[in-house]
Length: 395
Ligand code: HGY
Ligand code: MN
Ligand code: MN
Ligand code: MN
Image (tube, rainbow, N blue to C red; front, top):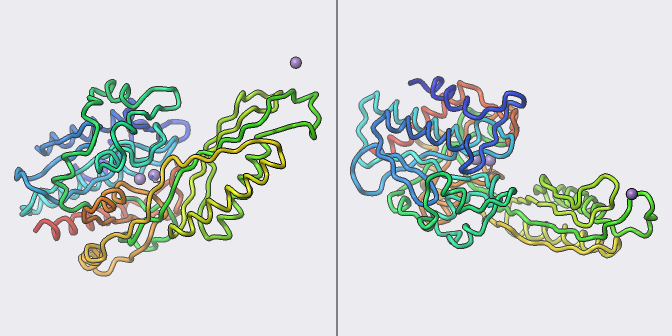
């Protein structure tokens, strides 16, 4: 099966006919459909699939029991996301293994294709949920406390997907992950060649800002009498934007909840989630401090109350230079670049697994949007690059 037909099959799953986007939250029907598609592809290739309690998968080519070279990515998406973020790495891994088999390559160590669950955290709010639990970074009991926006707990979602919550925890899969190489669509405008190699992942965090105010009548309450949390939030969003620009960092309020959310009532509470990222930890910390300081000062002026709760923080990840340079070598001098996007590869690298990433050019740099795009020739260059890297690592 060619890359093109694999890609056409996989990217037809769950595509919204109106927006062209994908909403594949972890363990939801469309994400399960994509996962079952992947399992069918593995079965067709006679790969031996291993799964862990939370539903991460590694499909092995080669029947040795020992550690091997693993590639792959994730099949879930953000809400109304693009086709490439995640699935490109899984489909390219299938196509790369097909190409290596077709040329008669026999790996000296097993090659595994991984699909890791809920990387975006779009359902349960915790990015890289599957890989964090697998790596022991997020304890099972904390993971099982997570609920989605409709109040469904992780355990219930797992049971509905035919998984056993009692199996959630550090994953045996990682004992066989000798090396991990993730191919991913580039999510910015930094890559001008078809394929690049990652140098690092920026530190990033998600912080819940809760603005408590006083519900009141929209028509009769004088402006000077209000304690309006929406105003404090709005000034905080402006401050975040300004502080991020000053710091050369990134700050986004992309998710908001308003209570009671009525047109003719001053809100009692506004909850906003800040996604903040910076090139280094010190800058990220000072960015968060600056935003929090301005939000607190504004809250005092508005007579509202602010609570800031870190929900997830990911440290900077510098991929091991030796492995990085080995990929650059194999790829005849592919460009090396950092990324502001988080990845399962970052979790595995931070857990001490020798890890590298390949990026495939994204001509517009747009991502986490139905407009996310990569040229087919660059995708094919990515498959060739991944096959060459796997061959070098498993020769
Ligand atoms: O949010 C991110 O950085 C990644 O795309 N999951
Ligand atoms: Mn993403
Ligand atoms: Mn991704
Ligand atoms: Mn009334």
